[in-house]
Length: 559
Image (cartoon, rainbow, N blue to C red; front, side):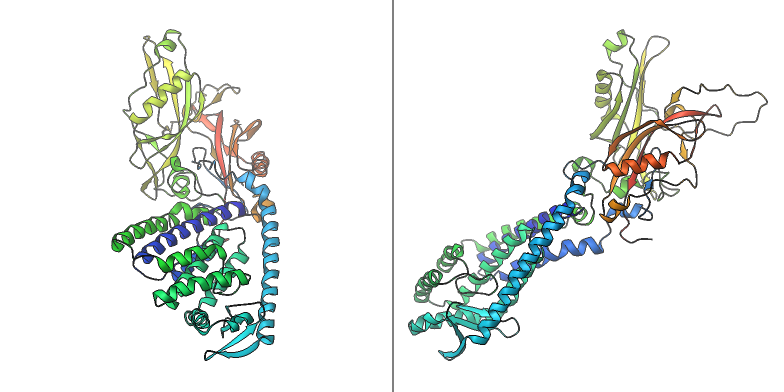
């Protein structure tokens, strides 16, 4: 979504600005000029978020099919954690407002730009051409000292400057000539275009101001040669600042009164002590900022309408979602996490054992690539008693899994595990976490009819021999047209019962999590038409409770 992309672009631009600021400190310590560092930061901060959104494929897109259809995952499929900082439903409602505000602001700034170009052209036509100290310049009543023109830069000075002494005029012309020589007008227009097209990115405005300041400080350093020049030049800056208006569109001798103090301080600053050490420290900070800007999380925020989630769900969505054996992208080498046999039972809480209390705990958590459990990702979906929940939480570090695999490679995977606390016949207490049961072996045909299962009883997937699976050829939910056009993505986690006929009992349908109401409606509509292979127990179909994620994801390259 646009709002999320904007936030990602602002964060990226801030990191670029921090890197440029650190690099500037290092270069200043070594006595080098810095305007090109800020120019590079501005160009990258303005262009990369736009380019990345076009040329980079978000990780989630690699698991999807055609953009018009929602991806239906297996009953045991994994689903990425919701991002608490970027709720899709909220941002979807404000995208239209943001786009309208963006368009209005850009149009107003473009109008200002057009008026400025007309003013500069008028100055170029009407200003008087005069030879001052051997330099052909334009003399205007209000504008200057400045440089106008991008292809053929021309120096403009105000008429009152002609009445000043020759030494001051020489400094003014030398300053403006330096701007022309190094191509500063092009950098000024780069900043103007960037802030005009992306007016909402306040980080670009800050970088643009730092670029203007760096240009003037660099030009001052090239202009001033002696201590006597420094004193005269500082007074000249103060004088010109009092007698002219600042212009956003041209390099000017005294661009902003707020920058005068920094420029004068830079001219009179003493050489840095231990410049190499200062430059090394600044370089380290710049590298850290660049690393942050190039991180996978930042790339996800710039390319996907659903940015990367928090640290507890580290690992790409592709690694997690593709680990499901029932998803469209899974292969023969894919598998979900499986609890290893021999895992110790859980200790039965003494007070509940005395009260003969029993019941299950259904937990969801991420299994790391080494088979350990990421305890920070624990989410309890159902619990018969808080004491049972505490026992499960304390036991998680000791559990070991065969991790999820994608194309044979171990990846992080989200699993849903059932823990049953039950009293054994001999009075002892056991609590086990059974792995997902394997498919039952083929049964010999017998003449005796198997005992029928009660139609009203509902089973969990771990209680049946063959869990519910989607019937081949069954069509999943349709992507809502409005959300697809707005490039809104999301997940719906639904709970329902599949009856013995392989149809979803819509009276049991419940949405546990949804990123948008339209996604929920699409799932509800599709489930009433979808067909499943019913769960089997003892060779007979039974009713099974299903918790199934439906992921709505856009493919960056329609297939």
